Image (cartoon, rainbow, N blue to C red; front, side, top):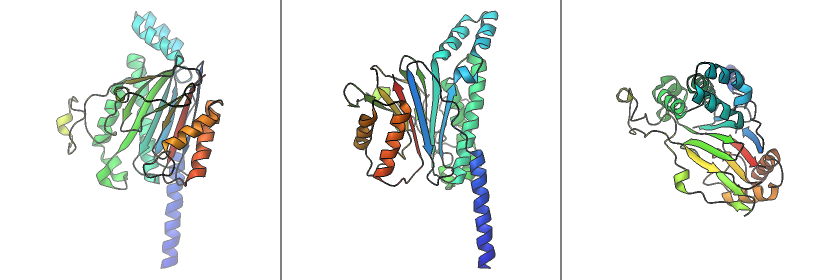
Length: 306
């Protein structure tokens, strides 16, 4: 009996790998903005597919902004046309970390990917931009979803996902929402170190799927063992100096008990600071892999103000 059981287990494992590979979304087109370099990488722990998600919104490539602007003007919606015009100089970046790094977690990441981009399309049609409402709706859905709960390795964890979504403009302004995610790091080329960012610019909320919003009309219909969350708000950071670098990442890069610390990361950025966003990203990953074995899915995005 052992041999057939072993063959069946191997077939199931291969089937799970196949589905995970097909379900894992690609990062998509990196936004191209004047004066801004962007590069990212996502490395699943198992080498196939895991719970991290990295996806971009290149507004100029994904949407016909000129057609949308013309339609808005024809309808007398000057403010909507103005909002759409601004998106020609903005790029969106979403980094998320599903609790766990198994194939089922890759499926949950794929669900988040589809929910985000479907919601973004609705947002663009309604208001000409991605607003906080999209993430309120995603959080509500993930709080309620029994499908996501059944996919989790530990059903009690439900759809526990940390997430950061931000939009970088060609002026170096980064506006973002954080849901339980590691805060962005800003490296100053002038001072050759990470700069301290005041906590009022790093406001974060509970991970996606843990707490329904107190203001939601259906809030009383949702289980609330951990209480309710407040409305999301937007944080703003600015890359002021030429060569400044902004890092977005999951906790697989800097783990609490890892030998690879923020000080090591700072040194890696310092050594590579004169390179492109891609060169800096590759240097950090190389330094991280040389320092200590990877024990979690790892995602990193480097944004450089040229």
